[in-house]
Image 1 (tube, rainbow, N blue to C red):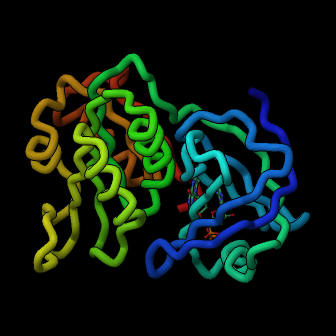
Image 2: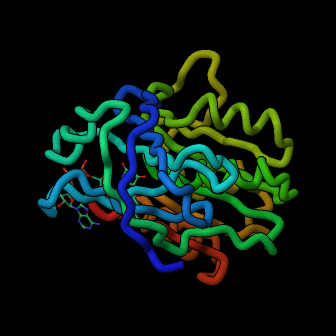
Image 3: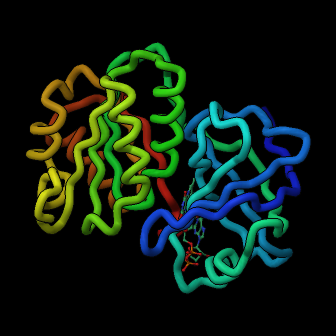
Length: 236
Ligand SMILES: Cc1cc2nc3c(=O)[nH]c(=O)nc-3n(C[C@H](O)[C@H](O)[C@H](O)COP(=O)(O)OP(=O)(O)OC[C@H]3O[C@@H](n4cnc5c(N)ncnc54)[C@H](O)[C@@H]3O)c2cc1C
Protein backbone atom coordinates (compact mmCIF):
# COMPACT_ATOMS: atom_id res chain seq x y z
CA UNK A 1 0.00 0.00 0.00
CA UNK A 2 1.13 3.59 -0.66
CA UNK A 3 2.81 5.33 2.31
CA UNK A 4 0.64 7.83 4.22
CA UNK A 5 1.65 10.63 6.60
CA UNK A 6 0.02 10.35 10.02
CA UNK A 7 0.10 12.23 13.34
CA UNK A 8 0.67 9.91 16.28
CA UNK A 9 1.29 10.23 20.00
CA UNK A 10 3.89 8.44 22.06
CA UNK A 11 2.23 5.83 24.22
CA UNK A 12 5.26 4.31 25.93
CA UNK A 13 9.06 4.51 25.83
CA UNK A 14 11.13 1.42 26.64
CA UNK A 15 14.87 1.36 27.37
CA UNK A 16 16.21 -1.63 25.39
CA UNK A 17 19.93 -1.30 26.11
CA UNK A 18 22.25 1.39 27.48
CA UNK A 19 21.89 3.46 24.27
CA UNK A 20 18.78 2.10 22.54
CA UNK A 21 15.15 2.99 23.19
CA UNK A 22 11.87 1.81 21.72
CA UNK A 23 9.05 4.27 21.14
CA UNK A 24 5.52 2.88 21.03
CA UNK A 25 3.07 5.05 19.14
CA UNK A 26 -0.65 5.32 19.49
CA UNK A 27 -2.14 5.61 16.00
CA UNK A 28 -5.53 7.28 16.03
CA UNK A 29 -7.92 5.57 13.62
CA UNK A 30 -5.94 2.33 13.76
CA UNK A 31 -2.63 1.02 12.46
CA UNK A 32 -2.32 0.84 8.67
CA UNK A 33 -1.59 -2.53 7.11
CA UNK A 34 2.14 -3.15 6.98
CA UNK A 35 4.39 -6.17 6.60
CA UNK A 36 6.81 -7.33 9.28
CA UNK A 37 10.25 -5.94 8.35
CA UNK A 38 9.06 -2.69 6.74
CA UNK A 39 10.15 0.78 7.86
CA UNK A 40 8.68 4.22 8.50
CA UNK A 41 9.94 7.78 8.42
CA UNK A 42 9.82 9.80 11.63
CA UNK A 43 9.70 13.62 11.53
CA UNK A 44 10.30 15.60 14.69
CA UNK A 45 10.02 19.01 13.01
CA UNK A 46 9.95 20.79 9.64
CA UNK A 47 13.75 20.72 9.27
CA UNK A 48 14.99 17.82 7.10
CA UNK A 49 17.68 17.21 9.74
CA UNK A 50 14.90 16.07 12.06
CA UNK A 51 13.73 13.23 9.82
CA UNK A 52 15.00 9.64 9.87
CA UNK A 53 14.04 6.32 8.37
CA UNK A 54 13.55 3.71 11.09
CA UNK A 55 12.39 0.12 10.89
CA UNK A 56 9.14 -0.87 12.54
CA UNK A 57 10.21 -3.13 15.41
CA UNK A 58 6.71 -4.24 16.36
CA UNK A 59 4.91 -6.97 14.45
CA UNK A 60 1.58 -6.57 12.63
CA UNK A 61 0.27 -9.03 15.24
CA UNK A 62 0.86 -6.41 17.98
CA UNK A 63 -2.20 -4.33 17.31
CA UNK A 64 -2.22 -1.80 20.18
CA UNK A 65 0.81 0.23 19.05
CA UNK A 66 3.37 0.81 16.33
CA UNK A 67 6.93 0.65 17.64
CA UNK A 68 10.25 1.92 16.33
CA UNK A 69 13.60 1.49 18.07
CA UNK A 70 16.44 3.99 17.78
CA UNK A 71 20.09 3.84 18.72
CA UNK A 72 20.56 7.21 20.38
CA UNK A 73 23.53 9.31 19.28
CA UNK A 74 24.58 12.93 19.74
CA UNK A 75 22.68 14.03 16.61
CA UNK A 76 19.96 16.71 16.81
CA UNK A 77 17.41 14.08 15.85
CA UNK A 78 18.49 11.71 18.62
CA UNK A 79 18.57 14.49 21.22
CA UNK A 80 15.09 15.67 20.29
CA UNK A 81 13.73 12.12 20.23
CA UNK A 82 15.29 11.40 23.61
CA UNK A 83 13.61 14.48 25.09
CA UNK A 84 10.11 13.29 24.13
CA UNK A 85 7.72 11.86 26.70
CA UNK A 86 4.48 9.85 26.64
CA UNK A 87 1.71 11.99 25.12
CA UNK A 88 4.04 13.96 22.81
CA UNK A 89 3.21 14.13 19.09
CA UNK A 90 5.29 12.43 16.37
CA UNK A 91 4.66 12.59 12.61
CA UNK A 92 5.30 9.39 10.69
CA UNK A 93 4.93 8.12 7.12
CA UNK A 94 4.67 4.43 6.36
CA UNK A 95 4.88 1.68 5.22
CA UNK A 96 8.07 1.50 3.12
CA UNK A 97 10.44 -1.29 2.15
CA UNK A 98 10.91 -4.76 0.77
CA UNK A 99 12.79 -6.45 3.63
CA UNK A 100 9.85 -8.78 4.18
CA UNK A 101 9.21 -12.44 4.71
CA UNK A 102 8.47 -14.85 1.88
CA UNK A 103 6.13 -17.17 3.78
CA UNK A 104 6.56 -19.89 1.14
CA UNK A 105 10.18 -20.39 2.24
CA UNK A 106 10.28 -22.75 5.21
CA UNK A 107 13.94 -22.41 6.31
CA UNK A 108 15.54 -19.02 6.81
CA UNK A 109 18.51 -17.43 8.56
CA UNK A 110 19.07 -13.88 9.74
CA UNK A 111 22.54 -12.34 10.04
CA UNK A 112 22.50 -9.10 11.96
CA UNK A 113 24.49 -6.80 14.19
CA UNK A 114 23.58 -4.22 16.82
CA UNK A 115 20.61 -2.03 15.94
CA UNK A 116 20.16 -4.02 12.69
CA UNK A 117 17.96 -6.34 14.74
CA UNK A 118 14.89 -4.04 14.57
CA UNK A 119 13.11 -5.34 11.42
CA UNK A 120 14.24 -8.88 12.29
CA UNK A 121 12.59 -8.64 15.70
CA UNK A 122 9.36 -7.68 13.88
CA UNK A 123 9.62 -10.63 11.47
CA UNK A 124 10.49 -13.13 14.24
CA UNK A 125 7.60 -11.93 16.39
CA UNK A 126 5.26 -12.30 13.40
CA UNK A 127 6.47 -15.86 12.71
CA UNK A 128 6.09 -16.80 16.39
CA UNK A 129 2.66 -15.20 16.90
CA UNK A 130 1.29 -16.72 13.70
CA UNK A 131 3.01 -20.04 14.45
CA UNK A 132 4.05 -20.21 10.80
CA UNK A 133 6.23 -23.29 11.27
CA UNK A 134 9.15 -21.60 9.49
CA UNK A 135 12.53 -22.78 10.80
CA UNK A 136 14.59 -19.75 11.83
CA UNK A 137 18.21 -19.28 12.87
CA UNK A 138 19.16 -15.78 13.97
CA UNK A 139 22.89 -15.05 14.17
CA UNK A 140 23.13 -11.79 16.09
CA UNK A 141 26.41 -10.04 16.77
CA UNK A 142 27.18 -7.35 19.32
CA UNK A 143 30.20 -5.90 21.06
CA UNK A 144 29.13 -7.13 24.52
CA UNK A 145 26.07 -8.45 26.36
CA UNK A 146 25.07 -4.92 27.40
CA UNK A 147 24.72 -3.98 23.72
CA UNK A 148 22.20 -6.73 22.88
CA UNK A 149 18.87 -5.17 21.91
CA UNK A 150 15.70 -7.20 22.63
CA UNK A 151 17.73 -9.76 24.63
CA UNK A 152 14.85 -10.90 26.89
CA UNK A 153 12.30 -10.55 24.10
CA UNK A 154 14.30 -12.84 21.78
CA UNK A 155 14.81 -15.36 24.60
CA UNK A 156 11.04 -15.40 25.28
CA UNK A 157 10.35 -16.04 21.58
CA UNK A 158 12.87 -18.91 21.53
CA UNK A 159 11.12 -20.39 24.55
CA UNK A 160 7.68 -20.14 22.94
CA UNK A 161 8.60 -21.26 19.41
CA UNK A 162 10.97 -24.25 19.22
CA UNK A 163 11.80 -23.58 15.54
CA UNK A 164 13.60 -20.35 16.43
CA UNK A 165 17.24 -20.47 17.54
CA UNK A 166 19.20 -17.34 18.45
CA UNK A 167 23.00 -17.65 18.16
CA UNK A 168 24.71 -14.72 19.85
CA UNK A 169 28.13 -13.58 18.66
CA UNK A 170 30.07 -11.19 20.90
CA UNK A 171 33.44 -9.47 20.58
CA UNK A 172 34.29 -10.50 24.13
CA UNK A 173 33.51 -13.54 26.30
CA UNK A 174 30.90 -13.18 29.00
CA UNK A 175 30.95 -15.65 31.90
CA UNK A 176 27.76 -17.74 31.92
CA UNK A 177 26.51 -16.43 28.56
CA UNK A 178 26.41 -18.82 25.59
CA UNK A 179 27.90 -17.18 22.51
CA UNK A 180 30.56 -17.38 19.81
CA UNK A 181 33.41 -14.91 20.19
CA UNK A 182 34.63 -12.74 17.32
CA UNK A 183 32.79 -11.35 14.32
CA UNK A 184 30.32 -13.08 12.03
CA UNK A 185 32.60 -14.82 9.56
CA UNK A 186 32.56 -17.97 7.42
CA UNK A 187 33.42 -20.15 10.44
CA UNK A 188 30.54 -18.75 12.52
CA UNK A 189 28.04 -19.15 9.67
CA UNK A 190 29.13 -22.76 9.08
CA UNK A 191 28.99 -23.58 12.82
CA UNK A 192 25.69 -21.90 13.59
CA UNK A 193 23.92 -22.56 10.28
CA UNK A 194 25.34 -25.92 9.12
CA UNK A 195 22.44 -26.34 6.66
CA UNK A 196 23.12 -22.88 5.16
CA UNK A 197 22.68 -24.18 1.62
CA UNK A 198 19.02 -24.94 2.37
CA UNK A 199 18.16 -21.51 3.77
CA UNK A 200 17.17 -18.08 2.52
CA UNK A 201 19.32 -15.40 4.22
CA UNK A 202 18.17 -12.00 5.47
CA UNK A 203 20.95 -9.49 6.26
CA UNK A 204 20.39 -6.24 8.14
CA UNK A 205 22.64 -3.62 9.71
CA UNK A 206 24.98 -0.77 8.82
CA UNK A 207 25.96 -0.87 5.09
CA UNK A 208 29.57 -1.96 5.73
CA UNK A 209 28.46 -4.89 7.85
CA UNK A 210 25.79 -5.97 5.37
CA UNK A 211 28.37 -5.80 2.58
CA UNK A 212 30.81 -7.95 4.58
CA UNK A 213 28.16 -10.56 5.37
CA UNK A 214 26.99 -10.60 1.75
CA UNK A 215 30.58 -11.28 0.66
CA UNK A 216 30.88 -14.20 3.08
CA UNK A 217 27.70 -15.77 1.71
CA UNK A 218 28.44 -15.23 -1.98
CA UNK A 219 32.24 -15.23 -2.37
CA UNK A 220 33.15 -17.64 0.44
CA UNK A 221 30.12 -19.92 0.71
CA UNK A 222 29.02 -19.70 -2.94
CA UNK A 223 25.37 -18.95 -2.17
CA UNK A 224 23.36 -17.37 -4.96
CA UNK A 225 22.14 -13.79 -4.93
CA UNK A 226 18.54 -14.99 -5.24
CA UNK A 227 18.73 -16.49 -1.75
CA UNK A 228 19.78 -13.27 -0.03
CA UNK A 229 17.63 -10.31 1.04
CA UNK A 230 19.37 -7.18 2.35
CA UNK A 231 18.43 -4.07 4.34
CA UNK A 232 21.08 -1.34 4.63
CA UNK A 233 20.74 1.12 7.47
CA UNK A 234 22.09 4.09 5.43
CA UNK A 235 23.26 6.77 7.84
CA UNK A 236 25.50 4.51 9.95
C1 LIG B 1 15.61 1.47 5.84
C2 LIG B 1 16.31 2.00 7.06
C3 LIG B 1 15.94 1.52 8.32
C4 LIG B 1 16.59 1.97 9.46
N1 LIG B 1 16.20 1.50 10.68
C5 LIG B 1 16.80 1.97 11.80
C6 LIG B 1 16.38 1.52 13.09
O1 LIG B 1 15.46 0.70 13.22
N2 LIG B 1 17.00 2.03 14.17
C7 LIG B 1 18.03 2.96 14.07
O2 LIG B 1 18.56 3.40 15.10
N3 LIG B 1 18.46 3.38 12.86
C8 LIG B 1 17.87 2.93 11.73
N4 LIG B 1 18.27 3.39 10.49
C9 LIG B 1 19.35 4.41 10.43
C10 LIG B 1 18.75 5.79 10.74
O3 LIG B 1 17.94 6.26 9.69
C11 LIG B 1 19.84 6.85 11.01
O4 LIG B 1 20.58 7.05 9.85
C12 LIG B 1 20.76 6.41 12.11
O5 LIG B 1 19.97 6.03 13.23
C13 LIG B 1 21.75 7.52 12.48
O6 LIG B 1 21.05 8.69 12.82
P1 LIG B 1 21.52 9.67 13.97
O7 LIG B 1 20.62 10.83 13.94
O8 LIG B 1 21.62 8.94 15.27
O9 LIG B 1 23.03 9.94 13.61
P2 LIG B 1 23.79 11.09 12.80
O10 LIG B 1 25.00 11.39 13.59
O11 LIG B 1 22.90 12.22 12.39
O12 LIG B 1 24.26 10.29 11.56
C14 LIG B 1 23.52 10.15 10.48
C15 LIG B 1 24.22 10.80 9.29
O13 LIG B 1 23.76 10.14 8.16
C16 LIG B 1 22.90 10.98 7.42
N5 LIG B 1 21.72 10.20 7.09
C17 LIG B 1 20.63 9.98 7.85
N6 LIG B 1 19.75 9.19 7.20
C18 LIG B 1 20.35 8.88 6.00
C19 LIG B 1 19.95 8.12 4.86
N7 LIG B 1 18.77 7.50 4.81
N8 LIG B 1 20.82 8.03 3.82
C20 LIG B 1 22.01 8.65 3.84
N9 LIG B 1 22.42 9.40 4.89
C21 LIG B 1 21.60 9.53 5.94
C22 LIG B 1 22.57 12.18 8.32
O14 LIG B 1 22.30 13.35 7.54
C23 LIG B 1 23.85 12.26 9.14
O15 LIG B 1 24.85 12.93 8.43
C24 LIG B 1 17.64 2.95 9.34
C25 LIG B 1 18.00 3.43 8.08
C26 LIG B 1 17.34 2.98 6.96
C27 LIG B 1 17.73 3.54 5.62
